[in-house]
Amino acid sequence: MSDGADRPVVSVVVPTYNCGANLDPLVASLPRQGLPSGSYEVVFADDGSTDGTPQRLDELAAADPHVRVLHLEHSGWPSHPRNRGLEQARGEYVFFADDDDWFGDEALARLHACAREHDADIVVGRMIGHRRGVPRELFRENRFDATLANAPLADSMTCHKLFRRSFLDRHGLRFPEGRPRRLEDHRLMAAAYLRAERVCVLADHPCYHHVRRVDAGNVTATRMDPAEYYAALRAALDIVDAHRPPAAARLRLHRRWLRKEMLSRLRGQALLSAPEQWADQVAGEVGRLVGERFTPEAVAGLPPMFQVIAHLAAQGRVADLRRLAEWEVSVRAHATVDGWRVEGRTLTVSVSADLRAGDEPLRFDDQGLPVLPVAEAVPAGVVMRAGGARTDVVVRRRETREEFFLPVVATTERVGATRVRHRSTATADFSALGGGRTRGTWEIRARVIQAGWALDARLPLVVRCAADGGVPRVEDSRRLRSRLRRAVRRIRDRALGRSARAGSRSHDRPAGARR
Image 1 (cartoon, rainbow, N blue to C red):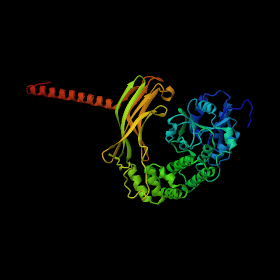
Image 2 (spheres, rainbow, N blue to C red):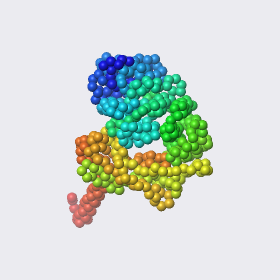
Image 3 (cartoon, helix red, strand yellow):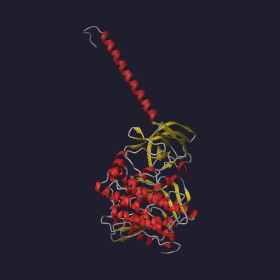
Image 4 (cartoon, one colour):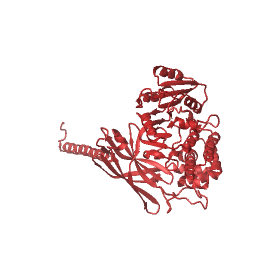
């Protein structure tokens, strides 16, 4: 690796395999990164593609001096091409991208500026999900000194981030190759987060668009083998245990893996839509892992629904897990708009919301815990705490899928013996939202968080901004429906009136008279 004056400031390393036209959005986004010519490079590491990808990459390299291509033997997983690409990368900073994702405009320039300004080893840019989930809480705000203890960094365990190259080299951080192959990015990120002196989160700009292909062609989208997958998770836990981080950081990582990689697979539609034999294997692996590697403290810190599932899995009660999942698929968020107003460029909206099972409000006991249809779901002596119930208000731009949490004043109240209602008043300043980039159409959603659910309910408001920082124009579909109903009534009344008058004239007409 050269340290000469021509060294780029950022290298983008992209593993490729039979990506075809799915590469086009990434290629199209590269010239719009706001970096001067010669200050960045793209290293495509092709993992033995058998389609036209190698030729396409060679053509890109021939036409663009920023592009280099490595042709590798097929390994079957992204770790090997990422490591080989990193070996060849010359940049001061490295970003790992996937071949079917793409960058937001000026993303690399903003990530690099953030890394330089704050002397960061890692910068996490806001991610936009396309048919796949991305962290939400992490991108609530910019964070320029984020740690596992003070921020939900553990929610973002993929490698799609900007890294200081010297930081990776100093600690020998590379993607694990060989078996087990799964969760290779989790293992690298766990080690990276635990060793980084400074991590920044750039939340106010859409940096990376993360895609699940319609054809499910992502290498890692194939259904995992439970034994191999949870062997990989054990390896990730070994990394944490060997590092011996402070308790808060360790618990954040452990609880993240409990929620996302283990218990979420045994809930609701995720469980019911999975092949029964495969789901039984997952339940068995999860049950063993809960007992072997997770302390009671780690489980007790989870929201109540996750605690219930953890206990059922640890006891091997797969039938009860299925029964609970069949009930849980009926749980949804319900929200209504109590009122809204626009003053200048600021929208204020008041919302009432709750959780419902089918058409009925979800029932909670006097401790704020959900009343579940599974008898003795939690063993005697286990105390669960509800806590954290609230309703957030989120705006999402249709054109780009960016979303932002709005500042809210929120309260929670009991209604009768078993019902819980949330009220939130949110404000959106469209002169400042998203750095003033507000041109477009914005949907508004209520996000109800309670007892281990985090569910969205779309509100009947749409906000349109004709220009960045412009005055928001609100469309309330309730008013549109009301006007439509009135118009239908008027048309009906006119039609009925004409019929009545016509009938009257017909009765007055002499027998045999012509029209």
